[in-house]
Amino acid sequence: MIGLQHYLILSALLFAIGLFGVLTRRNAVAVLMGVELMLNAAAINFVAFTHFVSPGLVRGHVAALVIITLAACEAVVGLALVINAYRHLDTIQVDEMNLMKG
Amino acid sequence: MAGEAIAFYILTGMIVTAAAIVVGSKNIVHAGVSLVPVLLGVAGLYVLLRAEFLTVVQILIYVGAITVLLLFVILLTEGATGLRTRQRNEQVPLAAAVAALFLVTLLVALTRTPWALTNQPSAAYNIGAVGTSLFTTYVLVFEVAGLLILASLVGAIVIARKES
Image 1 (tube, rainbow over the protein chains, first blue to last red):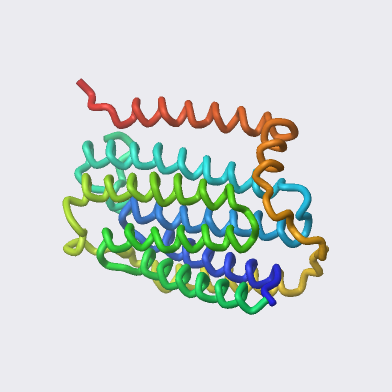
Image 2 (tube, each protein chain N blue to C red):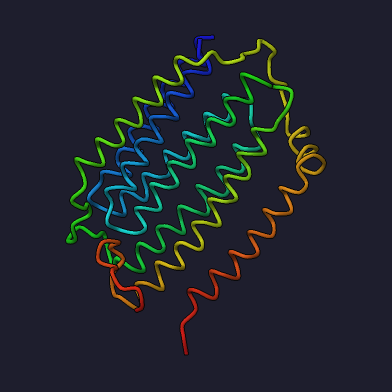
């Protein structure tokens, strides 16, 4: 029987993998991918709590929808920044971007 | 329900393997493409959790839009696969320690907390309930999200535009 804890453990695992990616990647786009993994882990938690704790209310579903919207916005603005940085600095490795003013 | 357990473990294996490729692959295009099985696996979990609308939204927005956008930017900036550049910084041991510590803390906390579980089953279809609560109780959240999308649309155009 799959219970709430199975989902929470899976989501914790996914969050830790995403955190590792954010901390170790040099490519700015890959850092964004790690952030997407972490956001997905949070959304799994919301939906799992809705299913196992208060199935009648769909608050967790609304929260997960908001997370997906925020992830889309964050990806769009982040990638626009990456493209702009690439135009000015010719690199998207985050540890080589060390200028306050391009 | 054995079927649910089998589906859960298959999805778990798919998500964790693909997520490991996302953070670990030397080839940045492989990492981007591996994001697709992760997101599809999460969509499968939404099916198991009786959230059909979220499943569709996850596939449409995450798999359909965000992944394609990420791959677009990889190909526009990195030129190719990024195999010739070093993909990791020097913090790998430290980052692994932080992530492991974080995971252990989370696991201890969530296995010891007594959750207020209920035996009441989820409704078979709750798309109507999601829509109703989105437009009544959470209408402010909905409007703010719409405003945020508009702001990020304008912001992305302004930032990425070529300066003349």
